[in-house]
Length: 160
Length: 160
DNA sequence: CTAAATATCTTAGTGACTAAGATATATATC
DNA sequence: GATATATATCTTAGTCACTAAGATATTTAG
Image (cartoon, rainbow over all chains, first blue to last red; front, side, top):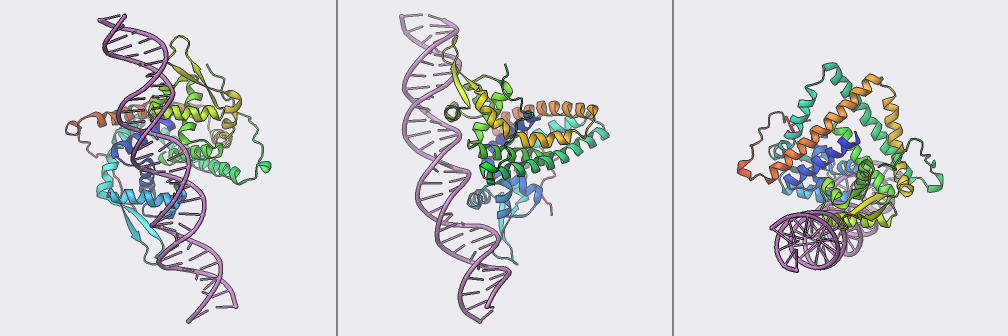
């Protein structure tokens, strides 16, 4: 799973590369696709970048015609970012090789098996999300108060 | 799956953050863990970074005491990078929250179900790897010769 | 023995990032 | 209704990892 996850990252890098946009830019496009029209600050939250960095991301994406800034009329401090479907589609096309490859893999599984994979994907997501929060919690915890992570199941290095 | 994959990336970022090393540095540590002692050039290949960038990565990791440079005695141009288990272990500990979270998820699956997940992980990895190659192939293909990716299953944007 | 190939390192320059503060708008308090 | 505080984004200066191109060291081929 780590291997395939890592390979997924590399695929994303290749997409960004071909599209001629930065890695974080693509990540934001992905979030915009998943969540729809979101506020700039939300992008910062989700990506872990500062709001300043997001300004740059959105500037580049807007210049590339991939997104549009839209001011919220009820709260004029907010800036919503919305994808421009016509141009964003071109990015979507770069995922076709992966989608086709995965579709081929999926075609070898029964409906019941697919349901299992889906269930696992959901549970795994929630689980990793929670673990991320836990880990980040350690940063804000003063060192002497950290639970001294016993390495229990880390049968780490020492390989060939 | 995209969601959990993205979250996995964020977990990695958090780890790198806590460990005080760059993202690519952590990625290389991961490869070193998976592949063992590897040549510097191999790291460049797998990560997609230039050899120059890898020199920097290894410099930083070596300074942090996480890896050691070892010259190959039979081919003295090569530099092998090897993790230093004692210090690398500290990085490994940062994965404990995720490992525990995932273990908890796995504990709800039968052996047969786990075998299915394993099979899928392997097939998925190979599939994504192949798709990456395909995509990268498009870069080197002169634009007019590209197979004009028909967007078949890209029911992209247009969400709420 | 020379030329070409391979593996890593070096250097100069670029670009995305952070931290801190600026700006603009909204909400709360008196 | 005026002032203070909070919120959301942008700006600026500076940092750091990255690339491209070439330097160095070693190996292989002719």
